Length: 252
Image (cartoon, helix red, strand yellow):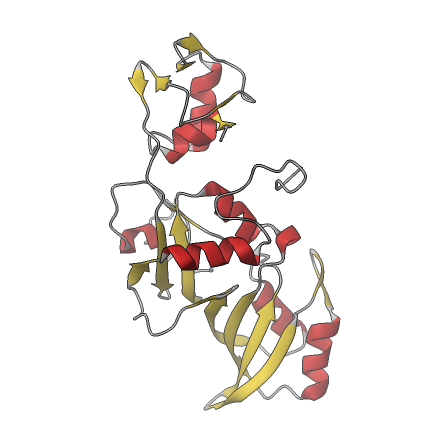
């Protein structure tokens, strides 16, 4: 399957996608021996020979990791403030990146992969792959409050709403709830509860589509099974490994 050159180079772990774009425009990338300078150029890693500064790149084996993210880790590859990142928790010889984000103080299910196709499907709001959270809030929201969350709240970046909200039980400082979201804007769950007067004290992502965190210990990770990977593609309405359809391609 043809892919943009900058993506092929980044997936091979040579440089970031942005840096790969610079290498292309500088004429340092060749496809089948010919210099390519166009950022829109594509190549098929199963057919074409791609090289950077004369060094051939290999198509990486696809890796899918499920991490139980602890508090105190940022969901980026590098942090300019020097804080620990989720990549510090995993060991792999292939460059992987987090799918979506959990903020510094949030916990739970996070996928790390080098499959850009799956990343787009799971994070783009068009595909509505649900995210399920266990949310600990101060205070005791009533039925009317929960209804407000599902009907919608106007936030600074537009309206937002939960798909489903259910009360799980109390904790010493308030209530625990299960919240199902259809998108994942920055700190969206925290902002929703703050808007109705119930600040979030703890937030744990328990599920992403059909994939559950289960009993994986905090700070540990495991590989996804082939069936789990296929189920994530199905949750987005796509066959395994398929981003070929122009009509369904993210951003088109």
